Length: 146
Length: 366
Image (tube, rainbow over all chains, first blue to last red; front, side):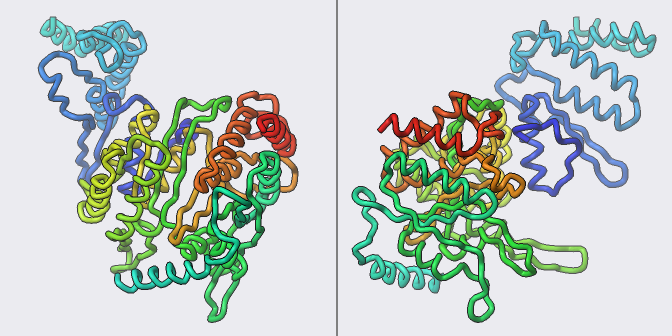
């Protein structure tokens, strides 16, 4: 895994090994701050979550990075088959990070406007994809944030 | 377990009598005899390479070759050949190449047999980045110390009912204390700054809790070495992001199995990673942990680096630091130079050419 992680695809394993390997693999892609997670239960229950800590030192300071939460939400959208919405938000999020102009501190940027940027990218995409109700919602959300 | 304590006390006394021969363990003067177990596959050729390099370095080591392929003793119990056991008991120090476990029915794992015969309780793997052999990680310099006798590998499993199986993880005070104290002694003897206990005591409160307690007690007795504790999953996450933050890591069996291979992967794999097994009564067996590579055996293609670095570990264990440094530097310089490297290191040279290059550098340093 530490030599050529690209050789792996889906890995299934018992509890302890999973505890270890899931954190190891999260480390490979950047840590718990950018890793999504989902828990599947019996009777159709599923809970998607960010697995990082509560970071009490930066609470309320508008410094948090919501990538893990956002990517987990994206996992949730796919789970409930809202694939188009899923694709759009995912692309917006990843484009924003790739762009490197607006990043939270833990992603080696200094910006507080990360979420806004994600949202803006998502709106741009909805214009091209003509999901008008979606972009209306997003625009009102943006208005709320501004 | 009073029986074990009594038995080990008796063996210590008997050992003392056995050792009162003229050919005893004086590590700093005279030739020291070491048991050499070439092993299978590429084992013999890489052993020859190591012997050649040691001769070029004028290391005061003479080799006593032995075969450890298990035989059935009286009573039908599998054991290592008596002459091999006798040699190890006499010499105390061994160097071992890769062993293949015969497929014959009921044949035990060779490594397991050696471990039980000599009570090899600590598996030590120093993982140091090799300059000239690029991996995604640089400046790695850590040591994993793994408890090797109990834990999750105690082999105690049973069926509760059909479809429900239980496996017992055995953690004892004695074994935990022994490994913890070894870790701190190792840190002290090798000028390492800190020891980190790797555990999951938040989940396995009694077993890992006991292990952790013994580590804390050992830390109290070695206040010159810094002691920290970290959960296993956190260690793994941090290890793949920044391995330079780690120094000496001590942990129970399963975690050690995983982490030692993980760390070997960071520096280039099992082909370049040394390993040492420390046993009771002063026994220590140093070994390469890669496979026998039967596909390249006898073709002069093998890379002796792992066995050579294990032999260097052995020299340090014996206090022969000057020779250890010389041989290690010659090996690293040859790899860094990139002119003569075996195929697995990205070169085209034969094992013999690689060995000769190291020998030449060693001779130049003499």
